[in-house]
Image 1 (cartoon, one colour):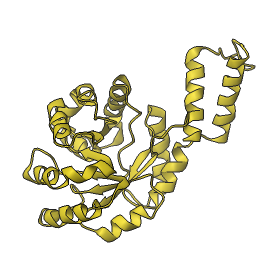
Image 2 (cartoon, rainbow, N blue to C red):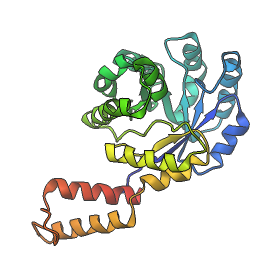
Image 3 (cartoon, rainbow, N blue to C red):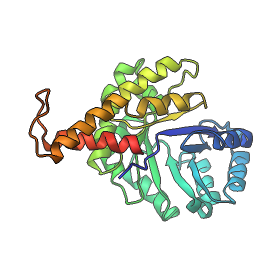
Amino acid sequence: MPSNQPLTWLYAPADRPDRVAKALAGEADVVIVDLEDAVAPENKGAARAETVALLATPQPRVEIRLNDVRTPYGQADLHALASLLSGTAGIRIPKVESAGEVRQVAEAVPGVPLRPLVESALGLERAYEIATACEAVVGVGLGEADLRADLGIGDDAGLAWARSRIVVAARAAGLPAPAQSVYTNVRDLDGLAASCAEGRALGFRGRAAIHPLQVPVIAAAYRPSQHEIVAALGVVAAADQGAVALADGRFVDEAVVRQARRVLDAAEG
């Protein structure tokens, strides 16, 4: 069956309804209405009110990023939005450091899909516990800017283990492959494409964007190429015919077939 997992996620500041509307009119699979980092403290109340107005009608392509639920801002978000979230794609919980935090949110918004974000060393150590906190968790991800600051990392090389850790935690928990964190240089589309290729190689699927121009680059990078599709079709056909090896000498074992079917699933998704 084709995958229904989104490939592209676009952040839009909650206090800018014009940008939210533009994002919803665009190509992103999911629009993340951001109450946290994109909104200055003095605008938090206005952002919350705009989000309440937006959610007066069902928004199946909208995911809400709350403020840190350990803060008054985050608690106010939950109080104001709890009854309106059933018509959305769910909520993104920032700066999660324990499974208990996730369960508290789940109790406040029963039935709403949750995506915890790991953004600290402590959260990373507890990634599997967070991913398995409750049935409402549908995915996990990294918040790399905060994680860089917490770890004192200056370049991408220092994030390699953290990225693999979140991929492993998600898959061990039976969750979909996580989406990559944002690429902050919105003008460097070639760099974005290269970074997406690296993320795909690590086991990520899809990516969050901070500018509409990034969305098609991410989608193209994460869709299987025609060469990959043809190769996967060859593996599946060989397996269906009972072959144990391909013409190039590769064995057609269960793992190879499973990977080929994953490529075809991604192509159809």
